[in-house]
Image 1: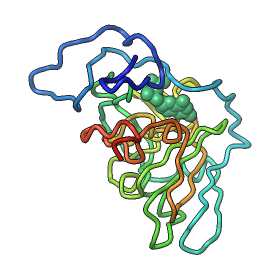
Image 2: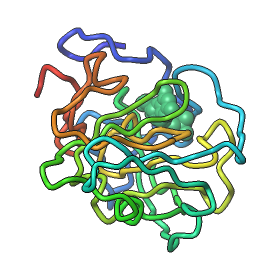
Image 3: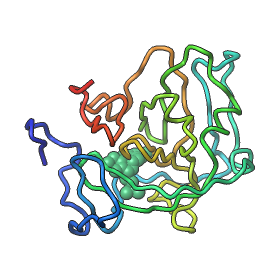
Image 4: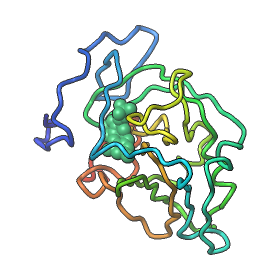
Length: 213
Ligand SMILES: Nc1nc2c(c(=O)[nH]1)N[C@H]1C(S)=C(S)[C@@H](COP(=O)(O)O)O[C@H]1N2
Ligand SMILES: [Mo]
């Protein structure tokens, strides 16, 4: 699959489940087409859940300079949040109305806040996957570290035990199997940002490719 500029998209996969008409009362970000079902799509193998060894690590430019690690109990003990959100993959398909439940990313930021000059965050997952997001996007009220999708606990393929969802950004900015983040004072590119995708990735502004930066 290529875009109008002839650039290869990151996954040349058929549109999952066929293309649907967008309901008249809804809209999609520019360049997106509606599909009816969420495929399983990621790079690399599905990590085996190991809850006893699982830690969420926050480091980089924290306010006090210290790195902190939290166990799953601590993260799951935060107040719960439900978010209904559309998912937009940078390969041009979207799915409407996914209901994520979990804890607000904002409350996890508060457990280990950033230094005042931090603007970007490198969110990392198992096996070296990482995505760069702006702190203001991670700190936006609807960003969620999800444990459930559609009322069911996340399956390993969907990112158990924890998956980041930032509804207005393309979905590569939401690592499955998320394990922590580093606050950045100098931007660092994550997995897809290094491979030609945009640092901000706001789907509504169609910030898809790095050449648009
Ligand atoms: N750890 C990890 N998370 C990831 C990815 C990945 O390759 N690894 N791919 C992203 C992309 S590009 C998409 S479209 C969504 C797909 O989520 P799904 O498999 O639940 O449909 O996961 C995102 N999160
Ligand atoms: Mo994607």
